[in-house]
Image (cartoon, rainbow, N blue to C red; front, side):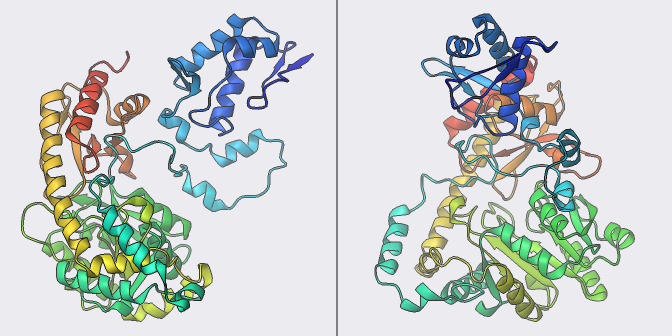
Length: 498
């Protein structure tokens, strides 16, 4: 006999009293599965134990036992005055997609086909948008000091009476004044040699990577990628069917000798030369020239991801790798999402002239044109000098916050984490110290259970990790936020089992 909850439309539980599994185990299993499958969203308020017990016609202790187990394993949380809710920050293993083949084996066989790409991509990468940015999430800019009044004024001024032609059609490569402004800025600040016609506007850096992969990569083509390196880049090239060649990064950047020996026939090398992600290494001039020599000799392309070059605090200013090229081999990409605010979703590519037409063909097949809404506003923001002024303010603020984070680590987590100053970027890599009793992945998971974002360095390695540490963002967090979070993190790391 099956008894089904009838009164609550928000949580469906079916109990089978003829099964050997105890009733409390059935309640636990079904609530947990609903959370894993996304049917119970983070923050969803569960029925009270008394109400659910009444609906299921079971003892309240049965429901309490199931809830206690869900709480102990991190699926739910209790809040005074607000009842029991699905945890907003779940253990990391809950954020990993099931292996598709295993799921198919468990199913009844009626599910529709998915591509091999889904299997190759593995981890689910969808971001949790319902959770505010928390220390120490990397790549989060400061939003409190963004000049929204100026931005709002520019937005209202342009869209009060916009040119009619912009409302019905647009350039495949993006708004021309914005492209010209980007070219002028990159030439002056980054030493990039280009005209506005070589600039293509994208919906953020990830779309730029997707366009590069679709335009340049055929299934089976080999691509050099940094190890450790940026997972989003790996995903874009995996989706294109590329064979990824994991090239180690040392103190001078990507090992060109290793790449030449392992995959001399690669069609593209993807690098972050100004500030390697996540290690923070700057590619030496010798390595840059080696890489360009290989690209010219083999007819390969080089993707230069200059994701946070605006925030360099010390040392000699670095020109882009593209500036050393003769304009024929390097594709340069950047984004405004990290520099201004993430929801802006505007990035750009700087293309060699030979690639302009191929990229336009692919863009036309995919999305016709990028959204025009914010492009004129950003163009004026740059032309008025507001962009440069904002960068100067943020550079000073982020340098101060980096110093604060290092001081907080030494004060609150001495011996647990060790961090050194970095010449650039919006995050630090803090090595696990002698007092830390657990590896970085376990540390990251324990901290995530308590709402602290600290990515494990070892997860960025495709092969065997040679270093352990936590990636700690600081740009978007105040001294008080970092101090509070680090004090809490230290207590967790000292006694992770508590």
